[in-house]
Length: 377
Image (cartoon, rainbow, N blue to C red; front, side, top):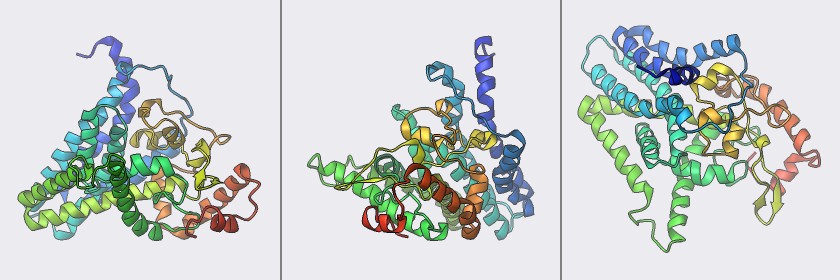
């Protein structure tokens, strides 16, 4: 029985629990097989886009004096998700490799949907958890990332992206006019390199080699190896390949979001390798209600860069006067990113408007980028 004092808090948090309905949906479509397996990505992308259109924007902001106790029901969904995802991922993996009604195409489609969920929800929740001070939460974030074989995202995000966003030193910042299909392979290699270098440099400042046991990459590799071995034991070689397939789809989903979040936005170079401080106008924002429920306010991205450890219910909304706005929520924008001509049609004019609004003194951006901010064109 929930105390009456908690009922109102639970009701306000419940919209952010909508992601949980994707778990039984995965099990249902696994049992149905056939074309039904496509329901998972359809629900994740199109249902929440339809809800965005129906429900509109949420421009309200939570009280920043809200206590941790008052955020219990919001936090709880991020704490239980790692266990639900683990049970679902490996449970469905066992089921798919021990049933006869699923064809190989059906299994591939099923784990495509699983990857959409482990990427859209799982990696996003790991992002929330890795930013917290509680070690148990950070461990849950590590476990989520290990399930998609992308553990180094934690080091890259905390040590590289937040420090160097909008500069050539951040591989995750999408350059102006850079299509996603060029961005994706670049960021897969660049983020791994930058993450390892950041950890290696931190150890060097302590006069320790990269092989020191405190290097988190050893933990990353051990967790990922454990997940791969478990997939092999549960589903054999077929299970291992399906596991790797869902991990790839999850990473693709993550990097689509990374592509959208800062596309074409650059921090002004101030000389001697220094850049202006990160400001709200260095992130694209979206106030669409339903997709922010699904993504636990990730689309309030400017405030996340302002206060990285601020829990998701407290992230503040920025209007067009303070930060650039996307025309649609992330589900639609990530689909558009897969079609570079469509993406550039919508976004390049917005980047040019952003440049005129915040940096009117720079009249030739091509020359400026080559001389001061040499990002690949």
